[in-house]
Image 1 (cartoon, rainbow, N blue to C red):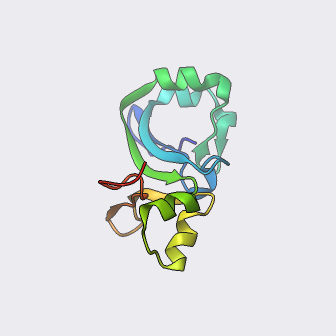
Image 2 (cartoon, rainbow, N blue to C red):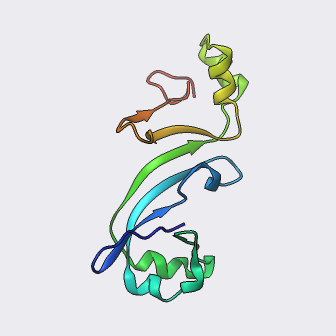
Image 3 (tube, rainbow, N blue to C red):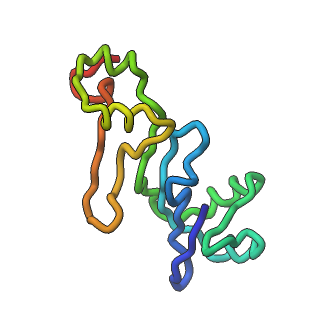
Length: 131
């Protein structure tokens, strides 16, 4: 997904904004980047609700027209297995265990409206964690 914000020669773009656009597998990233305006003007049919839906056949062209850094705004992860939680020896409240074991969960990024960046580590990701 690419959402434009007015700029003189380029648009900053959002890819995959919102939880509903995380892949079915449950893992994925929300990124922000700038795209040359001339590329976005080529496909008015790509516009949908203030965002751009770039066809897969055009992704190489999109990548070639990204200007500046690609910034990760949020990351979603798939479920943490019960075996991984048990191996870590953690005593988690039922609510946390349920959150970590759902199909997709927010593990890193900016909390909307708060100005706070958070990163939640799985047992395997934490320092000294189990593989």
